[in-house]
Each structure stands twice: as structure tokens, then as C-alpha cells.
Image 1 (cartoon, rainbow, N blue to C red):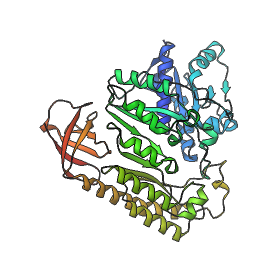
Image 2 (cartoon, rainbow, N blue to C red):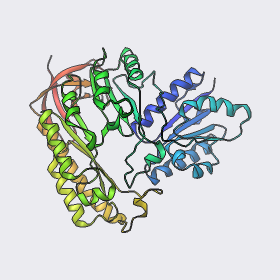
Image 3 (spheres, rainbow, N blue to C red):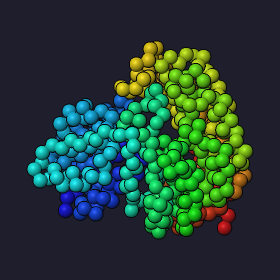
Image 4 (tube, helix red, strand yellow):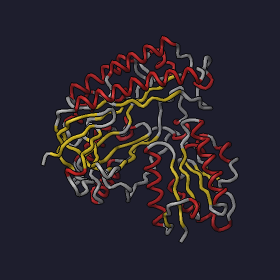
Length: 434
């Protein structure tokens, strides 16, 4: 039996797809192993959001081939799909496929084993492509399952290569989603996290919305929580918020990708909203969900972002009281509009702005956690990361730690009410209400 090692780069969608590949490979008789050094086959599921991410993939391939020269390397995912000609020049990769062919990887590997001749299959996307209905049968963490329900993007933000790597928007059918969630519930998973390349666009081809997918999950026996992945702000309507608020199992954490708090920069990014429209959405969410958490992504150093633009962005971000902020520096990506823009920002200015914005994020998260002190909230406990604590998350994704001495046995995959008694900059501490 051939042994396979899996390596995944990038987002939760990629990790979900890797788990699907594992399921298919297992059905075909391949065995998973824990190290590339002992593997007969290494499957690398790639990301291509940044050029530095590409470099990490190249380094991984070289390292694997140097330390295990006899293994078969299969490179798949977003990088080959977006840059097929460049990918074809990676001689250490024996098999190269894109994002459209992941379900065929076991058969492609079997074909390669017949004559060990290099295989490259990268099929371009078409306008009316349908959703690839891969599903997972096993999850490495039986507490929470990330479930991909949407693929592709039509937005073409000026800095982003993903529409070229993933094609146009398309969605998992509600019937297949219903069956998959039922199977996940039977495996003992308590929480579902719905994910996608542009999740907020779920269901357009079925005349459905993301709220329909949430309701399917919430109506599944055994599932206790339903959470959303990253969302595009312009797609969250009042009607959807009303429907979500009616679901007791829905977790009120909204990761709304902002990118910038300056309207001039948002326009240059080809984002489809203004800062005031974004603020209005946040206000409506907080009115609808009194205990909720708004988290976001912020980019600094976008081409032609002036000091004044950055100041406006920082002021806006500070005013939003986000629960957590992922701050990152703009990275040039070949093939995008932003890569060709004038007035690219130097690395030193990007780093300076990153430190300022990250400091805002640290203070904002600290303030959010402090606001939870005194509340009693349900916590879904996860695998213990430290023997001194039990740890888990509230519905609004506040990270909670409970001293181990208060409850000796493992609490993993259990839900208990916790009175929150203190907070730090990273987590809250509490006491279980028996």
C-alpha cells in the first residue's frame, strides 16, 4: 500500500479540499502517513494569494525532493491554475493539476504509476462551470468542521489573483449540503463553519442566499453551532440578518473583510462599498445581535496610499471596535491591476503602517475581551493545548481558558456555561457554572 503525505497552503477552503482528497485517496487504497520523508507520494495543495506564498511552495518542493528523491510529488491548487506556464517549469513536480481537477488526483496518480511520465493537467474555467461537489467523510478535529459550500469570485479586486485561480462564483447544491451536514453530525462534530472563496455569494444560481445554507445546518440534529467564514460586506442584506437572528444555533461572529477605512483606497482596490456603508452594516448587525463580534482584515501600503489615506483608514478602524483585526502589508501579485499601478509603497513605509495598525488591532481585541467580563456564555471546549487549562470559544468567538484543576477530565467537544471573570489581551478566563 502506497503511503501519502499531504501538505496544504492557504485558506480554510484549501484545507477542506485536502481533507476531501484524503477521503478519495483512502477509498482508492492509499494510506496516509505523517512525514514526507517516509512517503511514496506527497500531494501539495497550493495557494497563490502572494508571491511570497509561491516561494514557500517552491522551497517545500525542493526540500522534499532533496530529502526523499524517490517520492512522487503532485502539485495542485491555485498556483498552477493561475500560472500554468510557470508551474509547468517546476521539474521536481511529477504531477501538476489546477483547482478544477482535485477530485481526479487519485486516478491521475494511478495513471502516472503506469509509466512514470510527467503529467500536467490544468483545465481552464468557463463562464457556466458548475460546482465540483467534493465532500468530506472524516475530519481531523471532531469538535469543529469547516465545510466548503461556495467557490469562485466575480469581484476582481484590483490586488487579487483569485478570480483567475478559482473561476466564477458557483455553489454547492442544498440537497448535497444537507446530506453532508447530516453525515458530519453523525461523526460527532458539534460546530459547522461554512466557508467559501466568496462565501456571501452562496446560492445565486439556485435563487438562494447564505441564510438558506445556515438554516439547513441549524435544522440538522446533532449540530449545535453554525458559524460563518469571511464575508464580503456588500452582500449582507437586512433580510439575511433577520433570518440569521432567528436561528438559535447561529454564532454571531461576522468576519467582514474591510481592507481599508479610506474611501479613496477602497475605490482603487475596486471594493464595492464605502466606509460609511460598511459602518452602517456593522451598526445594523450590532442592533440585531446584542452580543456579537465583528472581526476584519486590513491591508496597509496599497499603491498610492498617502499618509492622509492611511490616517483616515486608521481612524475608521479605531472607531469600529473590532474584536480582532488581521493586518497585512500589500504584496504585489503579478497578473493583477494593482501590480501595474504607479506609486508603489516602499517596504519601510508598509512596515511602519503595519505596526501602527496592528497596535490598533491589539487594543481593539483587548477592549472586546474586557467587555465579556461578567457575562455567562456557553463555551464549546476543544482539544487541550496546555495541560494547565481547558480551552474553547463562546458563540461570538471569544477565546476562553478554564484552569484544569477546576475540572480534571477532558472537556473536549462538550458545551458548558462559563462565567467570565477576567481577561487578558488574548483570552478570557472563567469558571464553569455546573
